[in-house]
Amino acid sequence: MQSLLPFAGFYFTYFTFQGMFSPFWGLYLESLSFSAMQISVLMALSTLARIIAPGFWGWLADKSGRRRNIIISTSILSAASFSLVGVHHGFWWVFISLAVSHFFWVAALPLVEASTAYLTRENPGRYSRVRVWGSIGFVCLAAGGGYLLDWWGIGATPWIASALLGGVALVACSVPEVKPVSRNKQAGPIWATLKKPAVLALFACCFLQAFAHGPYYTFYSLGLKQFGYDKAAVGVLWALGVTFEVGVFMLMPRIMRRFGLETLMLVSLLAAVLRFGVIATCLPVPALAAAAQALHALTYALHHAASIGLINRMFDEQHHGRAQGLYIIASFGLGGSGGGLIGGLVWPHGGVLPTFAMSACAALIGVLVCLRWLKPGYQKSK
Image (tube, rainbow, N blue to C red; front, side):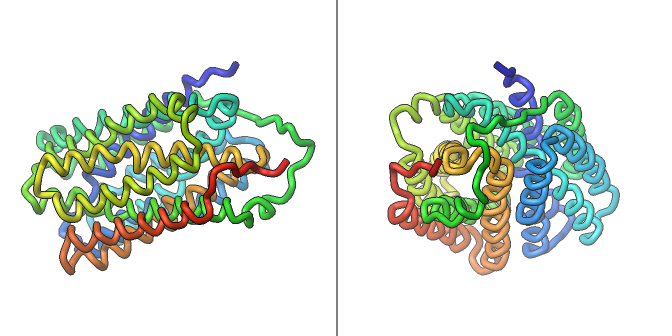
């Protein structure tokens, strides 16, 4: 059996960067005196890149059969281009540097996800035991990043993030090539799977969940700052959410033995309605802010594990690279960028309350879609 250790190492380093970027990048952009709309545009670049890039990289990987080469080269190019971000503080310089970096940055993760899902296909719960190392990496930087920035200043953010991306590039070199051996002699066209109602419903649920999280990744830290939380508290709250996420990932093998994937998807969407409703109305209360963060275990970890499991089940093995790319496009790409950008329009007209109420409504629509079309018992055709 092929070792999963290199994949755990990749997740760990990849999400240490995310643990620095998600909580503190918006605060760094605000320190450059960018407007709310400019901040939402720059924050959305990471999700906008997921609209175009994953489909291209997934197609290239499926056609070439060289996932490892793409993972390594794009990780190096992402680190190199991000190192330019802090050189100049003008909006367009930051915009172009970030756009180039994110185009390469989003390439590796869906390919690593496809390889990990394939290697754990006989026991899908094992996927979560590997993926949890990404959450651990996130916690390490989210919890410690606020103290680092209190010490070095918010201006150090791009340089710390660049160093972390350099670490991703180094670890990417250890990721082995994984070549799926299909049980079918030949798979049908991917479109035949994509047009099935349950598959469309899955991607709709992923879109709506990511749309609900778009304002969270863009404005949550700014909302905390408005209510008087300092950078250390911001980092701790982000880390708290991902700490609970770690717990769910560790329990996923047991959870998946008891509940169907469609049921887990429904629970994750219901939890998002509650979570963003609490953020919208109770963020100034530290205990309730912490409770809302605890629900990240369900709105992200449970949702993500269920999504990966459903995609792995619904699509033929020859299509897994493209299917993972399409998942990134539908969720973090279209959904995350759409939620973040629309949040940028709503934020100046009331801040936390209307912005996160919009998130709760998006998740509620996802609940209705899941109940209507994503029903237990769906299996891919052979």
